[in-house]
Structure formats: structure tokens, C-alpha cells
Image (cartoon, rainbow, N blue to C red; front, top):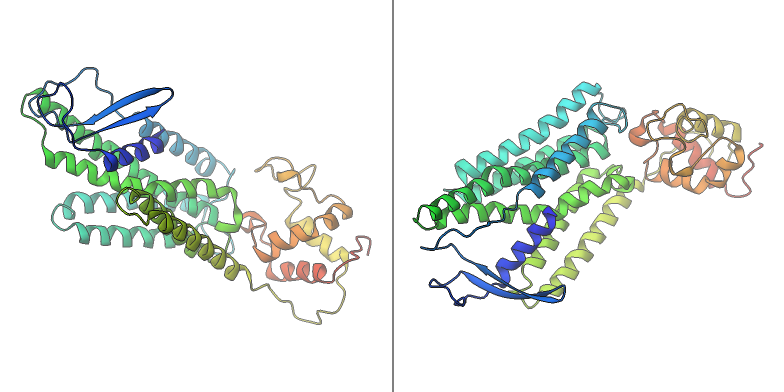
Length: 383
């Protein structure tokens, strides 16, 4: 609902037609007729200059508050208070669970504080400088998170940081500005255009944050993105593509070429993401010795038993993700052989398994799996 409201009201602001509203003594900022659900709707935007405050007056704020509160609760329960999701990558940066939690919380609060300070102190006098500083600062925080947390946790925390900024804009700028407008109109002083402009500025920022935040929330289900060695680049491309798509859509009422711009942005983003992911997964680990020497299946099964069956088993010892995530089990040789191509893609090419390398699979073990699979059929489980 929050995202829908953001898109709807920014769309309205771009199609409003200045016109004299019937029965009104003052000219509204703009009006528009809408057709939806079998009826006609007339929408008017005005600052109520010299007119009484209408009742009832509907506010749009609880969608933002409940979105942030529910997301924060999930983050605490799933990441901070349990081991349902892995915060760190043991092969990248050694942090205790408490240290990782502090890093994630610090990034969210620090990113919001940087943005808020720029908006309140610098933006009123130098908006370009403020934007440069907070964009650069948020990018630096995002890079740091990909280096010290697991890829999945890093992506989710960057999304949480941007979502916190968005919710903060609603709670600390948009709603207080609206209260000022309501008080001003109720007292007969008319609305202050500067107050309205301040709220609109951060509302536009929220509008550009929407698609990147949605992508970062959903993408935790797709390891090929966050587990890439180039995940920091993938993260930037997701943010840039999402904001670029939003910009093209915002221009659709003022630029006749918005459709080619939108298609080009989507295509360029998809190609860039594919390239970044493939570059990160193109270099497979190598193992010393003669690669033509057949790999003994017993060695393969030893690696699978040590690194994979803690989760992928009918009776897993690690219940973090429940029994046999994805319905994949490696309890028998036949099950291992049947999923050889999947093992290669997830453990060797993309390195998305084990999650955040939780069981600490080594490069030598990945290379062993790669050599076994590269030998081609027939694969002999009883070898």
C-alpha cells in the first residue's frame, strides 16, 4: 500500500491540469478526472488558500509505519535473535554474531543519520552538495556491508537502510509538514508553499528509492545475485537500474521518448547484471595435479557429507532452513549423481552453496567437485 500510494501521488502530480474547479472561489493547483471500478473520480490538488479545512481529512502515513515496523521486526527475529539466516561469511570476514548485528544496525542508523543531516542542514542552501554527500556516503556503507557481512545479509541491510530513510522521511518531514499545513489552514493563514515544497522534495527521493528497495527485499531469495564475488557491483547495478526505470516512468508525461528510454534502461540493466554475475563466476577453482586422473566418488561423497548434508538430508543436523531445503537430499549416491549439474552450478560456478559458506567448503573441495563433474557421464556412484 505504501509503494502504491507513492507511485499514485507522484503520477497525479505529473498529470494534474491547472483548472478552475466547479463551485470553488480559489483556483486549485491542478485537477484530473479518473475512471476506475465502474465510476468517475474527480481529484483536485489545492493549498486551500482562504478556505475552511475540510472534514474528514484522510492522512497517508500508517502504510509507511506498518511497513517499516513489520520489516524491522522480521530483521530482528530472523537475523539478530536467531540463526535462521546467516549474518557473516566465514571466508570473507571473521565477526562474531554480536559484532555482525552491531555492524548491520550501525549501517542502518548511520545511513539514515547521514541522509537526514544533509537534508536538514545542507540541502536548504546547497541541494546539489547535499545529494552528492549522502549518495556517496550511502554507496560507501553499501560497499562496506558487502565486505563484512554475508551477501544476503548485506543486500537486505542496504534495503533496510534505504527503507529506514524512506520511513524517516514520512515520519520526520512529510507528516510534520502536513501538520503545519493543517494548522496554518485551520487558523486561516493559508498554506505555506515552502513547507509543501520541503515535503515534496523528500517524497521525490522516496519515489526513486522504491524500486531498488523492493528489489533488495525480494532478491534475498536468489543467491546468484548476492553470492557473486562482484556482489557490490551487482548491488550498485540494481540500485541504478531501479532508479533509472523510475526516472523513465516519471518522464512519461513530459518526454515523448520515454518508452524507448524505459526499454533501454531495462535492457541495459539486465545486460549489466548478467555480465557482472558471469564475470564473478567465470573463474572456477583449480586443483593441483593431473586433471585427467579420475576422481574417486568416495572423495566426492566425503565432501558432500561434510559440507552439504547438514541441511540437505532427510534427517538434517542443521534445522536453520528446515528439512531438506528445496526438497534436495544427498543421502544416497543416486541422489548425489542425479543432481550433479546442480551441485556444479551452485557449489562451483556461482558459489552460492553452502549459504554464506556456513560449513566452510574449501576451494580445493570445490575444484574436486568440478573435476568429478567435468569427467562426464557415466557417473559412477559406486566407484
